[in-house]
Length: 544
Ligand SMILES: Nc1ncnc2c1ncn2[C@@H]1O[C@H](COP(=O)(O)OP(=O)(O)O)[C@@H](O)[C@H]1O
Ligand SMILES: N[C@@H](CC(=O)OP(=O)(O)O)C(=O)O
Image 1: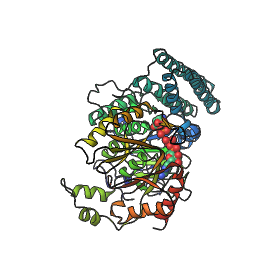
Image 2 (image 1 turned 120 degrees about the vertical axis):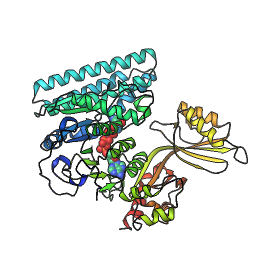
Image 3 (image 1 turned 90 degrees about the horizontal axis):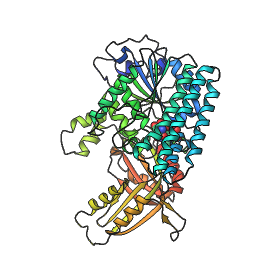
């Protein structure tokens, strides 16, 4: 991939040494000495490495030895960690903490067992990997015990008050990243690295009245940088990906995967050479490699493709991350902890997209000229993805023509109950909306026995019933075709839908055209994996 020259006063991305100082973006080994730029924070050439929860949970020693320690030869490294997951993310520390908080709300004391299990798990992980350094291990174990003690106190307090504010929820969640970073710090120290634990949970001390706007992010990046640099010139900071008292709550305002955003802000603040997001998979694929054995690796994707993929079920990177880093011209690289020497997938804007954006001067767009002419001949979609756990909510208006304000009322009702819509499709008197939820919204099997379990959904259904007949279709999934070239692939929608139809996959609703780079539809969840493979086989391979 050709990278544009990104900053006059600094090296172009192409010229910069890459991951661990071993490979350049072109693949050749780069052993040039690295210049120290005195104007950069810390006077050094920083790379920010963010490690996902499953990576820290399963490959901590590899991260410490083969990635951080090995990489320190050529560059300064700032490590950002998410909470550990030793199996899947669904069973990981963050999910267990959120379950503990929900148990408190339900009046149960199961949270005590959850905290104890987390404590034992982290202490044992330390014994397994830090055992040869008794002093470091002892300090680590004491810190884990202290964190878990505080966690129990917070949960116990909420249990007594029978209240769980978004602030307490965030605080509970923050323990996951704290435990993970204490572990990673100890692991690095035991291998001779001058690592320092950097807790970002109280980094927000500046006024935040205006919410999560550019000013807020700028202040936050500066505050994070100050905190990191206060640990001294030669340390390897190990930074909690949790970053504190965001107005409105981190979970509500930023959502899961917030550690990517933390890493992005650290990269912006330190003016890093590169932001690396390390995962358990070999880069980004054309489809989830766990579900589609023939999925192929992608060398690069654009920020919008990465955002669409993440939103629609393929966890690539938190969508808020890109804006910050791309604006600062810092390249993002998705890398695999099991294959550190590989270049990974880069996330960088497509120069053709940028040129097209520049050409569009105003409100109007003539698609056939601006897009078709500017783009290379049609090629292939970039990836296909599935978002499970979808319920479709249908509202059929009682009136024969759409009353003024029909859609507005529907959206205000959803807003009142805190429900957000992933896909929408509407006709004159009918609206279908796809709603995603990690926890079950409905229970029961047959149409007769089913009932709503979620208070927000129940409230919304009651209010919406005033506008018309409401029905719910559970156990659905969204399948999305994503790609920057979709807009110039004449007939691609037809092929997508007919491929599904020819293989007997029933389509419940369709959304096309809202985003130029995404075509989505809702199908039954039990068909999701088959549909994914069918679409991948028919729309990706025959286009070779
Ligand atoms: N198109 C895709 N490319 C790569 N991974 C994908 C894709 N779609 C879904 N995935 C899944 O996303 C997950 C991301 O990697 P993982 O290391 O588990 O995340 P984290 O870093 O958050 O712990 C993997 O489980 C992988 O199977
Ligand atoms: N631990 C948090 C934040 C995060 O970023 O996770 P991960 O990097 O493992 O996707 C979560 O589970 O959402």
